[in-house]
Structures are given as structure tokens and as C-alpha cells.
Image (cartoon, rainbow, N blue to C red; front, top):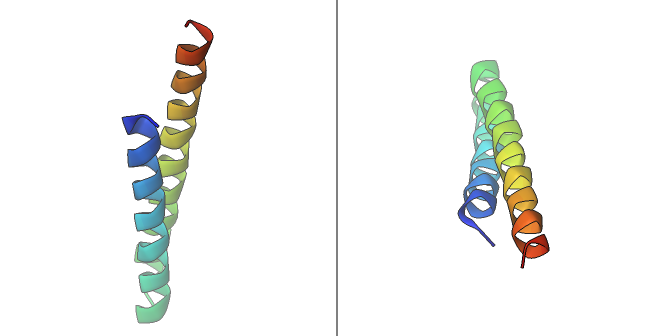
Length: 59
């Protein structure tokens, strides 16, 4: 695993927590921010996957 994969996964998990916390307290703004963090995290994780594939292919 590379840093993009790890950081992306952490951001995705944090976004899920933030979304759920927003639901609990009734904050639509926090729910949206949580969803945004999830999308950003998944995107970063996919970038890390791509980098890993490129690295493996060039060995």
C-alpha cells in the first residue's frame, strides 16, 4: 500500500463518521461534508491504486 491508498481510506472512514454524526445531531451540513470527504477519500484511494499498478507494471 502507498500513502495515497492509506490517506484516502482514512479520509473515507472519517467522512462516514462525520456523515453519521451529522445524522445524529440533525445537521444536514455535516452530512454533506461527510459525503464530500468520502468522495475525496475514495478518489485519492483510487489514485493510489493506479500508482500501485503503474509501479508494478514498470518493474
